[in-house]
Image 1 (cartoon, helix red, strand yellow):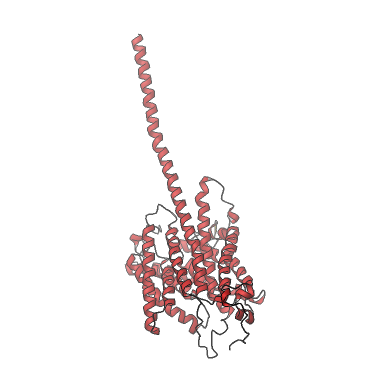
Image 2: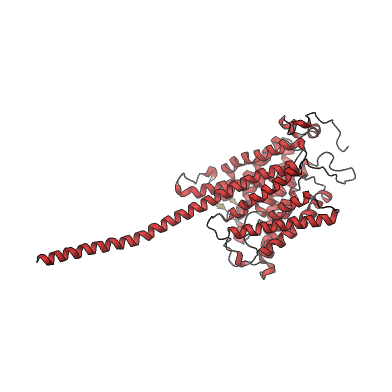
Length: 463
């Protein structure tokens, strides 16, 4: 009897041990899975932080490019515009812009909630959402700062700040909602992976509207309509700015995977660098044939044109397709600058409209030509092939609609805003202030004091 009881007790202990082991075997994989999910979220969050930092550094690139391509008497003014459009823009994007862009959709046209980030909580589970807002803020700032080059050397600083607030609060977020916010363009199947149109064409055509309303700089055009070259004061600064922008673009395009575990990060960066390099060569050669000189300025802007053009399709085209897109971006830049300056008679000191606006449209349309479905691992669009890969005209038509509608929205909205500002608060400095330089008249400083700070002699317009 005792042996039987001991045997039963032993069997009971074995059963309990087996049950505990079974529970452990079930619980351990579940715990590991939870830990793996946590690690993946942390990696994704850190990658988006890195992307945010790289895109923020692009503000320095824009400041250097714009001040280098313009005259020394306006350098501090351009630096201030780049600093303040980010600072004012970040606050207004937090207040309303992010909600208009990514809030719950009203008919696919505008977001309606999450103003002041009211939907987020300070909790571990919302860590990725907070950094996503940070990343998107950098993109909003990029769209705003593009305009500062197009209006350089003659726009009132206070009016520029007002413009920055309006674009970041309303104009950029509304069109951004149409695609990135899940709106009507996203439902059509429009592809703009990192913002050739949504960011760059918006900034470029807002800049065109501003430059048209503002008018050209004193001395830019002669009475017969011919244009004069107004050289910038430092190609060295401009070149450094371009290299900083190129560096930051790895965060702009690569960060747009939104996931550090994405298998496509390296692929996106490869297509980005190939398109930019190709555009440098094509813009240099086309302009060399056209003018007889290999222009440093055109080659530098060529790099930016290629970067803008590949931004829409960097996750959807092959490396060869990226090279073709970059090669076309070069002549689009060269003849785009001719169109803006010699046909439309618009003064764009740094070529912002051709670089960001026209090449933004080209790059977005190019997705409809060069998209290749095996590369579409990041866009979740399914089988999307461009015209040259057997996809017919469907995607090309969608790309045309998206690029043109967003660009037209940015141009029309900002043209109206600048017309109203011109009639109310004013947008242009006086002739004397422009001749003296905006550093002195707007900020009471001199960027290069060793050159002297004497005011320029007044000359009437058109002399």
